[in-house]
Length: 326
Image: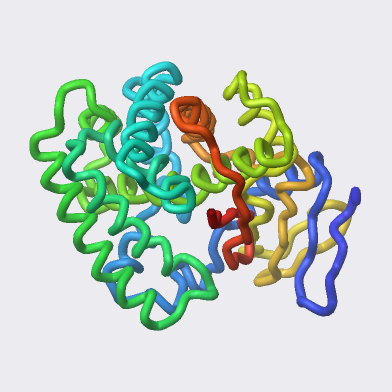
């Protein structure tokens, strides 16, 4: 598909193909959120909505560029590939040794690794992972009222934990690096810094867990796992965890050979174009971190034989995340 195509049934445009997707994701008139609804109505007015509204990946212009730059520099400084992969291997191995079933492990290991890199102690990791599981449940249009209520409570706990961590962030930790880079960039919104640290964890819980899970599926289907980095990179191309996203026209514009009216929606088929981490100004700043964490978790499995697994896929409008049963 070289041009945008109109899907009358869903009332939106569809973009597929690498070149067209790059054009859509780089277009200045196409936003990550509708102008009239910067925060999903279901969570607006609560703590989870306040976190969502401050996330770099959900904002444009200055509210996006300066915080993203600070996060990118902090990630490069404190979470290099070798460090992240070693930490993931250790955290994932500890969870396996503690008897965590693979289904729970696939979600807990990535988010616990990022929490550990941030500076949380080993004793704090289970609570952080549990709160994050409750928080991300509100980020889907499929979320129930009960899940949204739990997410508001979890976001308050996560923000409090982040605030306490930043007050005494260990030297060399990712939290300390974020604080330093934010100050250097003049990013002084304290709540936004806390919210985006929560955002880093949420991406680990879903996107990185999906990458790890899809890598486990590949192993179950016969893929070689001796080189974990090569396996994860291949899975990222053939079975990425994020398969689509949406863009919203802030004004009338020309895209992919057609006129898109203000307010119209474009469904962007990331997976088919091998753009699972996005592209352009909203490309995920933690994509290399995610690859290394998933690879480290796969390496941890070498200390424990992987049982035969069955799986289904989590209900989602934009992600492909397996849930395992043993």
